[in-house]
Image (cartoon, rainbow, N blue to C red; front, side, top):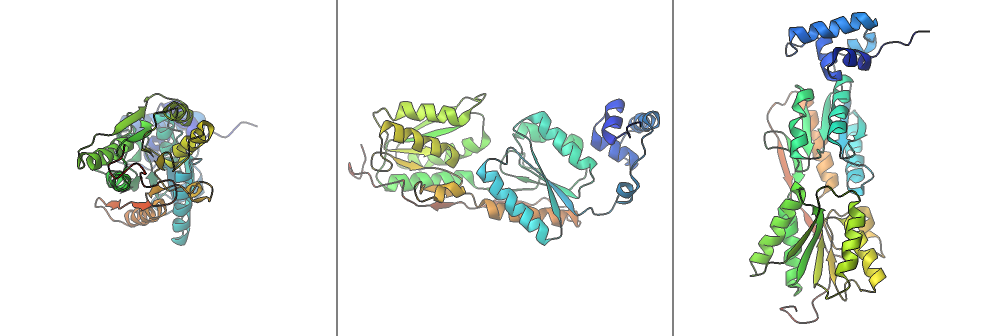
Length: 340
């Protein structure tokens, strides 16, 4: 029995994206006549017939939204995804989730495939501002809300104030009497890291200090292993007063290295993470960290997206204020108010 042709087969033969095939078959005015002709010719050659049930949904709600994140195995994204699915269900929507795995082409293909499925809207946590620029190739007029900071400013987005969060965390360390403070981790090209370093440096400059930063190379593969190796080197001594780590997941690697070196946290070195993932609250970890309010971000993002699905056309911007979660990995500097 001959295999039934799919929209993927049509797209490949016509040399266009899934979404372009879908829009061409819907007779969208934005698709050029020559492109429509190529798509129709490919359909005829392959004997492709669009599914009647799917076709009947054109112009109507499927009550489905897409969610694209870099890697849902990261507790930060899994926590946000859970809240997104919960909020969507409360509004009668289901969520299709996909990981971009920090690959630009995979991110674009995922968005393309979601559009072809005639979802009602999409939430995206982009890999970078550069990858986000390419989304316009496939999104068309599909309602979209971005999560985080990796986007330009002419779109709708929900994010936490990374600069403010790092500023407050650094002020807390300074108030404990720490002066030799290191900001560790985050890829050198990361916009998120750049914002956090700005807050870190602003707090230090207000106190006449410079601090130190140690970014990861932009092309590093195993980031957490890199953090672990750097932490092993740093904790051989002389020790800094405090280490402010780019994320909670990488802070875990610092704790691992400290245990191997026999360095006590917080007696010898204070430690702060960022993200407030669920692991950070475990009794044996009890990590002081900065909450980005990921659950609230997820809830607001769904609500804004549904507003757009229902006809809202203006740009929406929601910037949440972070919260310092003080636990037990920081301690007052015992060497005096002005530190070492």
